[in-house]
Length: 296
Ligand code: NAD
Image (cartoon, rainbow, N blue to C red):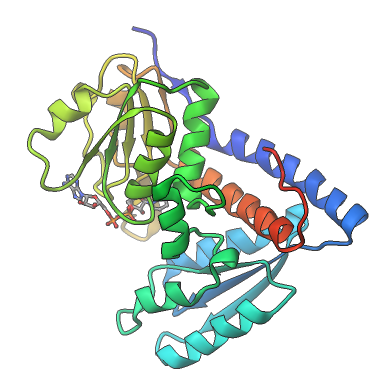
């Protein structure tokens, strides 16, 4: 069998950002609208700092104003909530993103619930999760699964009837991913750490999305020949002082000999997550101003 095609998230994300940049230019010109994204970072987790830098840089590049708020790891819950309530009221801010994970002393659920659902560009508020679950239009869809679906559909536009397996059941990736695939009329299985016969479940899937956080858990012989494989995992392997090596949840070299298409790590899902965040911010800004949303 031929080697799997690479699903190039970097290239697809660049395409999406280019479309967003011209939409943003049009909004500025015709509606005098300058969408704004507030990014809240608590503490000094190195990976979170990199993510926040990438997000704010890409905002500026496409023409979204970014407002970064950095708070110390020992910030009081009440002070964090006060900041979020202020951002909810700020008309310059159309999207609010609280970078996760938060320090252990912070009640994450309470913080996410404090974000105005209309500004919840991460799609983590229960109102948006509920809309997605119920199939009600108007949900702001979580960025990582949204990006995964775009990658899948770049290869196979019509997914009806295909068997999809989502490995991992987190609120931010696994569960919304399953809902999006269900909405595309896939037959969806969710697998997790208590699943019996994980390799067998995976082998039945035409589309396999791995979001586990276990380096190379999914082996080549778990994959149905010709399947589409989306690797969400980002596992940092310390290289003794050198730059950390990034591994996905899928054994890439094995998998690419069996799958028909596969995302690399890095350069697959990661760039799409950030591009979809920019898209959600533009959508939130259009809705706040009763303007038509971008069709892409
Ligand atoms: P999580 O820890 O919240 O959830 C992991 C899930 O995997 C759980 O549902 C658990 O049941 C399941 N699981 C754990 N071990 C398992 C095993 N041995 N067998 C089967 N299932 C198992 O993680 P998350 O937030 O969903 O993230 C998953 C991975 O995706 C992480 O590596 C994370 O860094 C990465 N991630 C990447 C992006 C991106 O933009 N590329 C975004 C979010 C998360």
